[in-house]
Image (cartoon, rainbow, N blue to C red; front, top):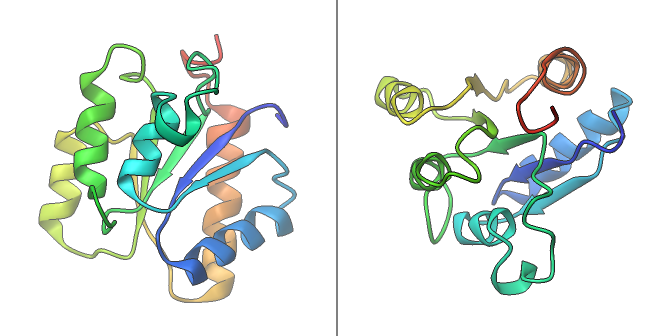
Length: 146
């Protein structure tokens, strides 16, 4: 499980720190790559820009994608992930504070594998991250890892 990378796409430093803390507290010790905007996430996934030296065939096991991002929003990131043959099967979990029904519908229409609202309560957030890690990193069999 440790060699399965998680891509966390999150622009809010507090939410980033909380997510990393929750992963660590739940003994999810996978490598976590953090992208702080949509452009950086796409650069990482497609091994370009600052990530041009990265092996483009080594994709994350799961991408945790916020929707409200600078430069390129999360829905557009998802659209580009699904449009490319190399990344179209990548597991993408929308992890956002958005409660908007249109965001949920758009996320699923664009091919999100899951949509999770960030719980405001710390203990609930910890439990959500524990379950997320258990499912996506232990139980789920993805075509990326086959």
